[in-house]
Length: 428
Ligand code: ACO
Image (cartoon, rainbow, N blue to C red; front, side):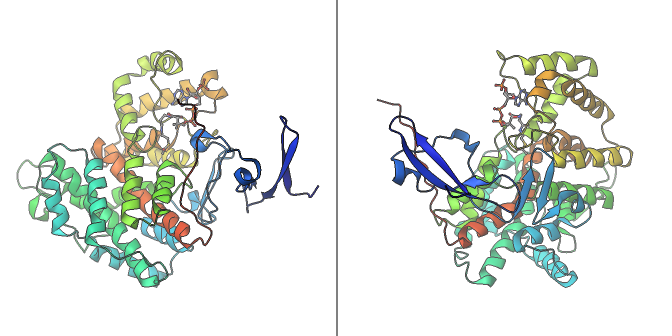
């Protein structure tokens, strides 16, 4: 028997089938079962893809057992807070960090592409007041495909670059406008004099006319560099996470040759769910619901109760059965910012107690349930004066370069096929 193969035997008839084992650069090897149906007339069965590598990728590497996350080979700890989010986006989309000149060009181009067609803004009028910003973002991103009908020729490098920069640049504008529209305040247009992350905070906070301070009793909305750097690091930590649910959705839609903005709009929809990007909103709700450190044990007991659907939000991860490295970085950031940003001490105390009680409980230990990225982001985002409905939209802004990079990798893969799984039929 050849060395790098696996033999599967059907014990019903004794027939054996041999499959190649392929090694990646790192991480688990895979068994190439692409001919399994042709060979055996059977399908493999893996709901939720817990044992399935759905593609080959060179973008992001996760070692869930050893809490490791790398973008294009670089450890996340060497990127978050050390390179700008835009430079990290360049890294994901182009395979290497930009030179100084490339970084400046990208920054400049993103500032100028941040405006959205007025038609997108008119679209908001069709949506009800108080629409969740995620609903507006998904609809607006979908609509972008009607405004930009090109971007389907990846062999044209310029077209690809325009596509990636345009969607990156417009996402914060769409997010901020979606929020302001949901609360009925006048929309603020992007300011070309501001860097990407600062511009987003500006569009969220500014008074009409772009004023950051209001004469009289109004709050000072001035943006500090500490705030920009903190949000920039949070965006970097969200930028990619290999084949998660929303990225898989982007790839699946992309595999049908649909427009890239449509694929990304589908990713936004997938990210909204509470089991995925929507969890950060729920974490804050839950911490507030717990209300006091003394109530923590009863909530932990509720999370362990199999007859109760309640889950501890911000805990657990499909891949990390040990600490989530993004959560670790955020926890350090939270400690650094506690005084500088006047973080909500009561919420931090409750969160710290939840973590302490859960991690010393065998239920969580045995299942490898640790705090994930969403457990820590909320307290920092709240200190940045970001409303809770904007937590998942911020995740979208952060994840956009990852989705673009994964979509492009799929479309450039000569072996890519339309995503079309089969089923185990048990109906009539
Ligand atoms: N609270 C209590 N129990 C949990 C939790 C939790 N947060 N998460 C998992 N479990 C338990 C399950 O009940 C199950 O127990 P069992 O083996 O006795 O049946 C076991 O741990 C395994 O859970 P699964 O749901 O099978 O794990 P899966 O990998 O499918 O789900 C998920 C991962 C969706 C993240 C899950 O842990 C969860 O729902 N967490 C809360 C939501 C959350 O924080 N999501 C954010 C994920 S990170 C991100 O998207 C950025």
